[in-house]
Figure 1 (cartoon, rainbow, N blue to C red):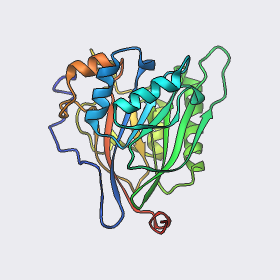
Figure 2 (tube, rainbow, N blue to C red):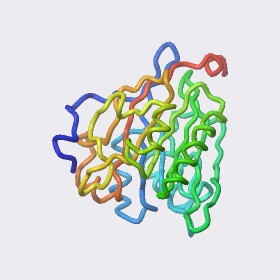
Figure 3 (cartoon, rainbow, N blue to C red):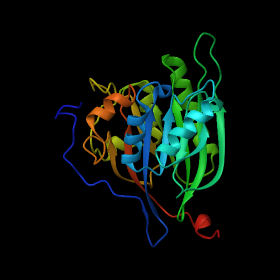
Length: 264
């Protein structure tokens, strides 16, 4: 697991709650689950212990009975399936019952011959008086295609039509890469704003690089973000057994949206 150089001093990550002014503190988890080919019980334990309101999945099951497998994971984690899966070429969204869902959309990206199809799972949800767009992504291994997908991602976030957005996933690139820098130039890189827990997401047995990340718009307060190493209920054994990536967990304070507050 991460060495002391990649761990941050233990801080309390806030629990989810809604504040009197309508703002909402939410926990968001991004996790590449490798098509649930590993220890699914360990995977569900890691997700449950993180107590997320939103889970941005990459490499969800895509083939025979994929909906059944994704629904089982959601149920085992006390969540429900929001969108994505095979219909988004792998990215998916799970959410708690705390979320009020306005709409969802699965977006398939242009296919480059010889490379994997990629896509986005997106949704618009409300927590208390806060309205937010959400996007899960898994970007290409090929650098030029990945950079183009980063531009499409930024455009897709704008198309959600919400005052604030949360985006995250497996970028297949470190923070110094041009696609990562492109996203961080438009959005807040949550780890860079307020690091918490562990930094590196790949691999669980030898964490040495940060290629998974969560981003949000300026105006959303980042209360902490990182790999949930040492979080109560999250064990090193489960993190190693669950999949071939480590998850990224963030606590965010979403400001109230006047139009959301006015709705019944």
